[in-house]
Length: 234
Ligand SMILES: Nc1ncnc2c1ncn2[C@@H]1O[C@H](COP(=O)(O)OP(=O)(O)OP(=O)(O)O)[C@@H](O)[C@H]1O
Image (tube, rainbow, N blue to C red; front, side, top):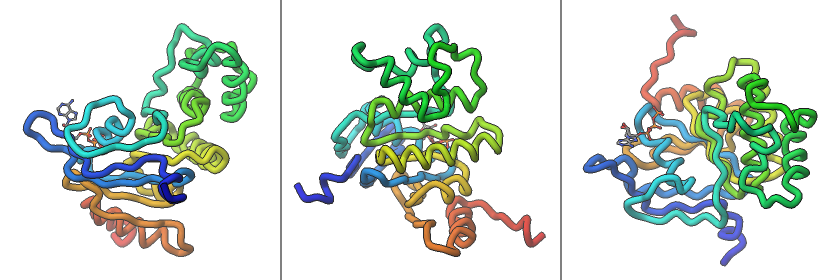
């Protein structure tokens, strides 16, 4: 294997997924490298969540290949915490018992909840609950982190705080990331690479990092998503 291949967090080739006769993913190719933050945009119903669930191993596939060196970790729009378990037990879910509390404590500290190990999910705000969900994902030391609109239900300021946190966590742990989002600004703020899904595959790719590019990219992305934004010129 070459060094480049070694760095892949996931490699997808010729992926196909159908619900009955309805083909949702068709000949989709995608590679995400470790440390690379990829955002996935696309019109509602184009198959983003279907792709994410296939990558997560949650759903079967009907053709093609998904090669991932390790089981990916997933954070969904809702935190999906177990209400009867303390925060550290929620984070430690699936870890071997030995050292689990220490690992959960370190992960909770990383998301700013270091003093809340023995607290309960019911005492958390929406943003804090999503922090716990992130800690639960990162404690697995994933090579691929799948984020399915994890900030969509949060208020605007909490969302920005979460962006800063996630960017920092990804820079430190360097998993490959696939973020499904409807928020063009979020994709531009976080991603190294923005993919647009259409017709069951990746139809376009953008890199928003070059100085001066975000405004142009926003317009380009909105156009690709079929959104006419003439508010500013109205
Ligand atoms: N379990 C299922 N059975 C049948 N059809 C499904 C199932 N799950 C999704 N679909 C259909 O597959 C298509 C893709 O759905 P998916 O949820 O992947 O889209 P999406 O891009 O994530 O949408 P959104 O942006 O609205 O979340 C949709 O037309 C949806 O109705």
